[in-house]
Length: 255
Image (cartoon, rainbow, N blue to C red; front, side, top):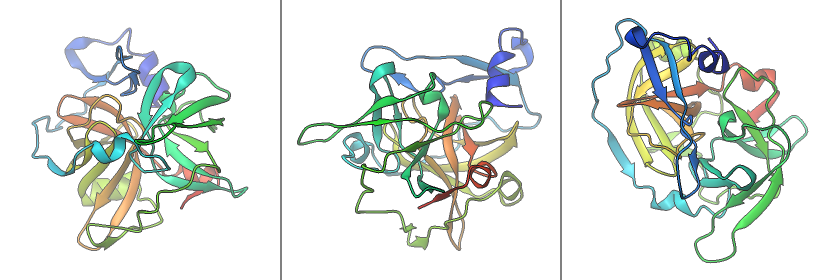
């Protein structure tokens, strides 16, 4: 079930046997209020909804004023008064660099003005047109060639190599690895795989409003693997939109 169809069936769903994703889908309205949709879908059988232990690696202070393309860093969509988190750095087939994030950060199509906060200096402002080839998927590529990638990079995490190739939902369902994420509200933290359902990865988290679009990745004994971007939250659980197979279909690769 696609995320748009999931939203579309919410109004007629039965609350008695539903999974309520309170999401915005995790985008927050700047400063004043939170844009929230309650997205109802059938609860997958056997899912463990208890609050798992969350391992906090770093607080959100390093993501509030990124000043560059920082995975998990905050950005504003000025025209829509929302803020989200930058996801995976990537390059399209024309050589344009940019980043993946959640499509619901951009409810309207067309060019938008992005604001990247800078701690000591003027904010960075760029105009970009998010690429959203598939309306049924909560994933967008934002080409911003003028926005430099943070010098810190992400070539490795936890002292392990970061794979350039994302893993599939089938792989996640089979291996059930530790899942980590970065976001401008919660920082850098890790939880556990709980389920693969309706085309999303479900995992334990402390994800909050504003973390939408931040990178989600799997950690094994051997390596760290890209998974997707933060999509929605339901109490102690969050969901991620997977990168595969869409980035191959869109001819975009991670950088």
